[in-house]
Amino acid sequence: MIVMKFGGTSNRDAAAMANVLRIITTHLAERPVVVVSAIADATNDLEESARTAASGDASRGEEILTRLHARHLAMVDALVSDKARAENLSRVFSGYLKELTTLLHGLAILRELTSRTMDAICSYGERFSSRIVAAGLQECGVDAVWVDAKDFMLTDGNFGKALPVMEAVRSNLARVIAPLVKQRQVPVTQGFIGVTSSGAYTTMGRESSDFSASIIGAAMDAERVQIWTDVDGILTADPRMVPGVRKVRHMSFDEAFELSYFGAKVLHPNTMLPLLEKNIPVEVRNSRREEGTGTLIDQPDPSEAVAPAVKSISFSADVTVVSLSPRKRTNQYLFWDGVFSVLSRSGIDVRTVTTSEYRIAFTIAGSYDSSAVIPRLEEFGPVTVFPEQASLCIVGSGLRGWKEFAGRVFGALAGVKTALIAYGASGLNMTVVVDRRDLEDALVRLHREFFGSSTPSGEFDVPRN
Image (cartoon, rainbow, N blue to C red; front, side, top):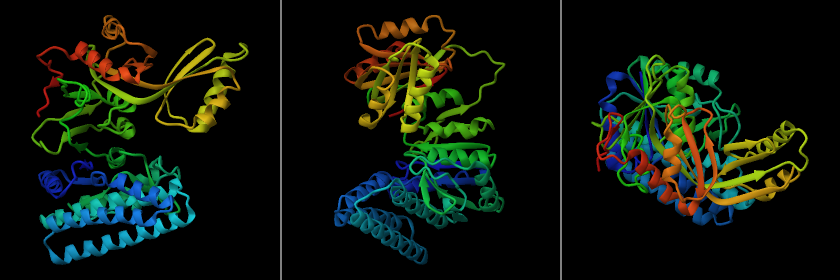
């Protein structure tokens, strides 16, 4: 059994979804479980409709929903010729639209958008798209069955960033999905969403359908998990910013986790965690070029020597560096404990931390409420904030023992002002924080240093245009 996850760009329109259907049918012998994201931009539209309604403009929010509903109906018209099947989808989608409209009216009255309500609204994107994939497979003669994620994906109640209750998920999958696979049926379900014990829809964070696929794969002991996207695999850098990028043929779980955690968009950071324990491989493949090899992620053989190599460079363009020292230099452990307690209670997303005996500096990724956090930190001592920074994370194997590595990094970045440098505890990465205005220049320099040769080694392929 395999798990096949298809992202929003793979389901962008009817033509793209027809290609997804074709790919699935070529893997029927491997007994696939299909996990589907919302179509491209659907989640953005749902979020916009919710925020617009919460501002008091329910009619504008409804206009956004009506256009999104029409996009899905156009895909049904193109992919589903069976009249009864198409009419059933139309009824289901009309019901979804009615439910969403009711939610928007409530938001317009209350003028308050909670994370719980946002999750309820955003859950419809995956429900729309997965219904179409299931019906499209049936049109192809495949015995496909649509399964609502709420029937098995039990999560905690941390709306927007929910985590699975794995024992319950495992038991539910054995009851709901496993019998379908055993009967050679193809379950089609949703990524991104789950449900609390009280029945409320949750989401597990933006772009978390990969995480959903890995949860299912780990719980069902899948042979492998396939992540189908719109690039050839994991690349050495973002091709929108760096010329001459390459595709990485193979990565370890730890390398892929470091890369995604520090900014790479091709995988959700939590994707590796459920699969690591059971050593279930992940394939990142291009749905537009099925014949490509993609990138294989698995656990390397510990008995094999690993040659030092940089695999990829990821970045986060929205970073703040915060530095502080204690007002009284007595017990640094109490100081650290107090600082991290503030960050934990505030839900701050800290990515990189460096310390000296009496000073801490750390990065905050994305936006945060500085008025709520900084005054609480200032109770411990003076705080310095460096806004508008960007972090670059160089990920690879054997970096800690590579004598030339640090020198090559610093040589490449000569003349670039840095706000923080951290050599990762894992020995798999180095993070460098620079002024946001220098991000592209620094990224190009580092990529040229480690991937500048015109002939790729056996670790890399030149991606196709």
